[in-house]
Image 1 (cartoon, rainbow, N blue to C red):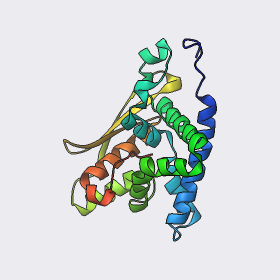
Image 2 (cartoon, rainbow, N blue to C red):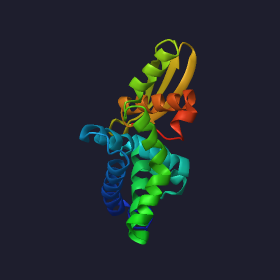
Image 3 (cartoon, one colour):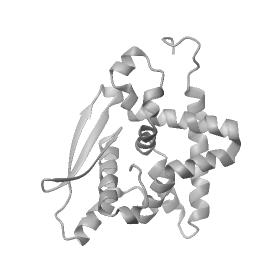
Length: 205
């Protein structure tokens, strides 16, 4: 923030946006899936209320390109870091909530995260790896193999995962942990294998 005098930090908006997002997603899955238990509702919420899923949406919106970052952070690839992108999306949601109220914020959440929620409901919550393995077994394909690389300093690692069957790459994804990256890669693979069933795009946990 010191490199951009006069510009207020997004931290307070991030705080509010995180709370608003959790509330709106919880309310949405509660009303849309009356048949689900508390545990399954929690799985659905976790499928989109996580840094990997939010960063994917923020990247699609191009939020990274309009952020004010310090020179060091920008040079280190900060505009593509899941932690920064997810925080930025939470700040945007908070701004929409403050400006337009709960209805406007709910509309935004539905447009940006609705497809990911529907995918999670169809494919077992946030466990895209299990869903992919089952999908491949039904197709009589070989088992998926995950290849993970990492980048960045220890305090801000970014993991990139690729999922393959034989030599064919089915999907890729990023996350703040190896598990998140693998789940994101599996989610993309599921989308490619069954786009009609998924009903849209989005990232995994």
